[in-house]
Length: 175
Image (cartoon, rainbow, N blue to C red; front, side, top):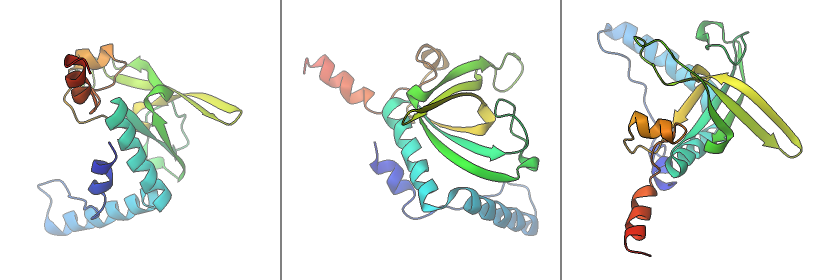
C-alpha cells in the first residue's frame, strides 16, 4: 500500500505542457506551473500528506487532499484559480471522513452522476468540523484498480482497494 506511492516520488517529477504550443510558450507555461506547484505542494510536510492520501486511496479505495485555497469564495462553491490569494491549509482525508453530498445532474456534462460536493467531517482532539466542499477543491485518490461507475456508486464512490484481490483469494481458500 505504501511502497508504490513512496517510490513514485523518489526521483522527482516533471510538468509536461499540453501539445500544440510553440516551444517558447510551452517552456514558459512549464516553468510557471512548476513554480506554483513547488510553492503550493512541495514542502516536506505537504509531500508527506500527498503520499499519505495516495496510501489511503490504495488501502480503502478512496482518499483525498482538501486544498484549502483562499479564492474569496465559499468552500462549497467551485474553485476560481484566477482569484487564489493564499494556500492556508492542505488536509488529508481518509475515506470515512468525507461522503458525497450533491451530484452533477447535467446529462450532457462531463461529470454527470459524479459527486459535485462532498460532506467533510474532520475531528482533532475535542474539536470537530463539518463542511461542504466542492469537488474542484479536492484531489481524490483511488486504488488504481478499474471499478465500474455502478460499483463505485454502491460503495460510496470508493474504488476496489488493492487488498481486495488477495482477500478474495484467501476467502476462496477458506483461510
